[in-house]
Image (tube, rainbow, N blue to C red):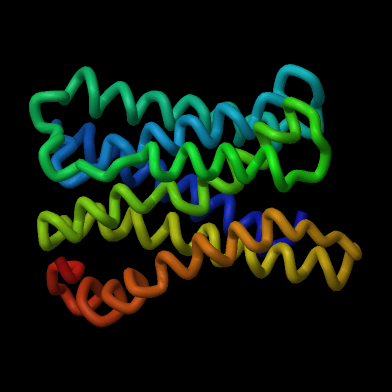
Length: 212
């Protein structure tokens, strides 16, 4: 493991913790896209099925279990415990327009035509666009709470750091995964506009808003 992957994992974990604390402390999931959280739960479930077949390290296994557990905990908080605060009217992105094409692409372009490999590839493709319902929701409402923007920043930073991880692994380990790299680039590009607004507004104490 290199420093970029470690920092990426920590940034990812920070994003998840920030979101859970935001919901729990405020007793509200206002401004949070339940659809994005369902997509992330699907991402982790389909990616980490290897928990049932292989063991890499205690760190690897622990992080996978934490990601899966936190993803479903978030979905539970949004759709069950604090359902009354969920803004379903603004969380209206048609996720089938993401899931169906991504599923088809995973079947067509993968490293190995096996069930686990197709599901892993599906998770990589889906993660690259899973944040779109959240960004769409912010665009519809016109603004986002500061704590929500911190969550999104950490999530985007995680993916950006993983790009540096792939570069490091290519130069020092000779490892190259085109599927993961392309999906990572797509995901990072989706955050570019948000990163700009985060730096120019949120860090200056202003509320973040996306063009409607």
